[in-house]
Length: 103
Image (spheres, rainbow, N blue to C red):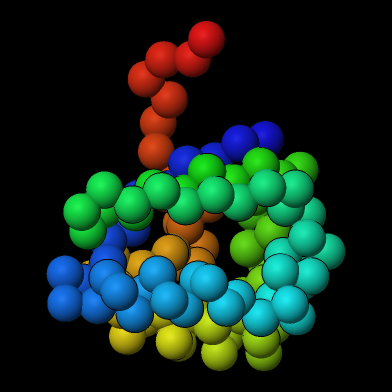
């Protein structure tokens, strides 16, 4: 399945957010892949961040990552930079952007 998400980086933290993503811990990327993601891309337009995630089961991916210490630490770090964060709440699996058109 493919899911698209929208988050927002704080305007005064864009450079730090981008710098952090140049150094994503190998342990985290390995965990994301092990949880079922085959691809995760983030685009930025101003302060808007658009994520596209390819995975077998998004709800299962979130469940695997939610309490994983390396991800908990990463999400805490990202929370310092974001106005709108990635949603790990029970309704977070419904937080994806709706498809408007697809070729």
